[in-house]
Structure formats: C-alpha cells, structure tokens
Amino acid sequence: MSTTTEKYLVTGAAGFIGAEVCKKLLAKGNQVVGIDNINDYYDVNLKKERLKQIPTENFSFVQLDISSRSDVEKLFQSENFDFVIHLAAQAGVRYSIENPHAYADSNLLGHLNILEGCRSARVKHFVYASSSSVYGLNEKTPFETSDSVDHPVSLYAATKKSNELMSHSYSHLYNIPTTGLRFFTVYGPWGRPDMAPFIFTKKILGGQVIDVNNNGDMWRDFTYIDDIVEGIIRVVDVIPSRDKDWKVESGSPATSSAPYAVYNIGHGSPVNLMDFIKAIESELGIEANKNFREMQPGDVYKTYADTKDLFEATGYKPKVGLTEGVKNLVSWYKDFYDID
Image (tube, rainbow, N blue to C red; front, side):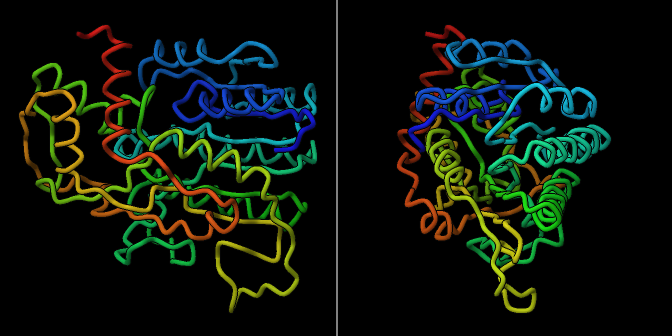
C-alpha cells in the first residue's frame, strides 16, 4: 500500500467481507467511507454488530441504498474518493430464484450507479465483487478466468456476469481501471447466516437436522475471510492499464485492450462437503443429524479456483487451512451467541 493517506469508498460495509476490508484499510492508515443499506435479507443485528467492530478514527458510515441514483450521486459529489471497493450486492443463489427483482435493483442498477460515480470522480481504481457462480455449467476444473462464463444457472450468477460486462464497457469508454474478483465460498467469523458454514454450525449446536445437498457429493473451494481480505487489499494496488496489443481473437477474456481485469480469489483446493461437515462436527464434538437430498436448483457440483493469475499479480497465496478456519468460525459463533 502507498504510504500516503488515500480515501476509499467501501460499499456493503456492514457485510461479512466489507466490514473486514474496512478494518484492514483503516489499520493501514487510510480514510474510509462505508455505505450499506442494512437490509433485512438476514439478521440486521449482526450487520450492526459488525459495524461496531470497525474503528471510528478515519471512518465514517452512511446508510445508503446503492439503487438510489440521487443518493449515490450526492455521495460522490461530497467526497473525493481515490479508490472504490464495491462489495454491496443482493447475495444468495436460491434467494434470486424467489426474489429476482431484488437482484435487478441492487446488482444491476446499483452497480451502474456506482460506476457512474466512479466516472464522475475519476477514481484511480474500481475493484468490485464478482462471483465463482459465473462459471455456471462449466464442468472443467479448476475454473480459469479464460473459461467461458456464458451459461449461468441462477439469476444471481447472471447479474455478476453482467457486472463484469458493465465494468468493461466503462473501462473501454472512460478509461476507468476496473478489476472484478470472483469470490469462492468465503467463510469464517462474522460470516453470513444464509451460507452453509453458518447454517451447519447453528443447526448442529441446536440439535436440528442439516440438509446435505446432492447426498453430500459436492465440492466447494472454501476460502477463509482473512485470505479474501488480504487478496482484495493487494489487488487495489494492481491497477490495470490499456494493452494496445490485446485482441479479442487471441486474448484472455479476463484482460482487455481497456484497463480491465478479472481474477479468481479462492483457496485453490476444493473440499468435499462431507469433509467440511466432519470438520465442524469435530470442532463441536457433536455429530450432525443429516437429511440427504438431491441437488437444488441453481446449485453447482464443484467450485475450484485457479488462482495463478492472482498470485502472479499480487504475490499472495491463501494461508488458512480448513481445520484452523473452522476452529475460528466455531469459536466466534459460540462467543457471539454466548454458547458454552
């Protein structure tokens, strides 16, 4: 990171990843403005508690919905951002099947509003959250950013692919450096209650039955939160530039003649779902009551990140393994919910 103080906008600051990114940026001496609409997609109290963990010095929080064009315009007019880390989105694969319009508002309109803000402010670098879900029906593993991502299996995935396309157009038209990060199954303390690691921990502790999709024959590239945050922070300094020699016919879709880049950000070693459950069981000392069921709509069989491009760009590789990560998750959960 630069030794001079920079001003960052972090969207989704009350979110799992966003709150940790804010803390990391502040620890490095930067100014941070965090925004979040604090919607009730999951426990609002958890979001508020995350915000309380963020140091107040050099940090300001604004409750704001990115789908509001006027509010986003006012924010960019009142602040002089150097960098934008855009993590706000309506998350969840299955929820996108039930509530598609929420995804259009946040992930499409909201993304456009933030892009417009970046254009007007001429920010140095726009880094945004994409998702491993863009790989959709792709069965070739590990997933590489050179792979086709034209066949999403959920609306959520389609919106994330759309974000990459929208960002490329702004990079091309307005010379705005943009980098998309395809996150792979992030877990750890302060995690999202709608994701399997949190759900499994909660239900096993409560003696409830856990649903095990595809009869347990699934693989996920579980990536610990600290590794994700370190990758994000490092990517901010890797600002893409124009490449006049790049051609559509021969170039990778993860790069461009425009100042545009896309990276996978994951652990790079997929874990079988049953092994992940066993790790939680082992840490809790409780065997789960399991309901084995078929693959669910919008699900994919396996996610597996090829992260060599990210490593070459930033020099960073994930450090936290499954045992340590699950231990930290369970320890936090028991402490936060006051469980002996």
